[in-house]
Image (cartoon, rainbow, N blue to C red; front, top):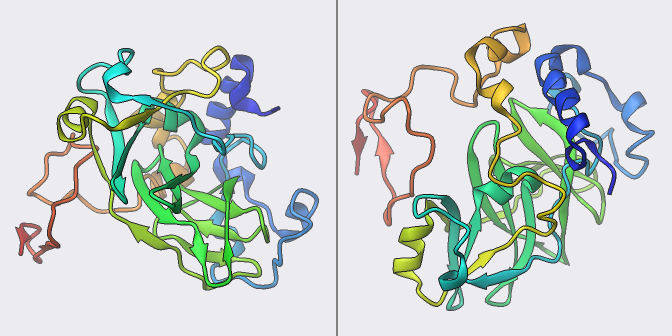
Length: 271
């Protein structure tokens, strides 16, 4: 599959593109060449909220036929390597972030439930969805577009666009449809192994062509890169204010608690 993440020389072009996203805005007239099936007149957000992250449609390839190994055989992961973990119908699976960073979406079926495991490396959001909506089951790919620095997905059935953070269709024929969120957590592979000794772990689909374990977003994470354009400084992360005082500024991944919680106005977790 062609795309900037498939070849290392193109990677630098992508990182350069991240620094110049403000100049990469376009609209339906340009997009229709790549998206002839998308019903662009149906949209819930302004077109100028979408920017190009650099790659084309499916330039970051979703995994559609995932392969897994027993967690006991996952020797290539360090004990604290983070994974997205879930359990459905008695099946426990882990999706290493070192793999997700190169693919962002895994279309899978666990415990008889068709799911999409998603991770946006730019805003560090890990979200798992049920791929079913009334009347159909969807499969997802990457648009190459960002909105508020967050992954914009598309379904292959109608080529409607979906916001990864929240799972709502924001452009296209399925406008307003909402994906069901499923319980998942980000934790270390060591902790997953202790909780699910019979669990299974996603393996890279093409370990020879991608440098799994290395982040291609170092330039984006650097403060100097983020502040080099008005776009990056205005939309660094979805949360645009200071972090809540109850959380360390360096904390990037946290497992969700087993019960709902809230943040009170002072930013201190409450029940």
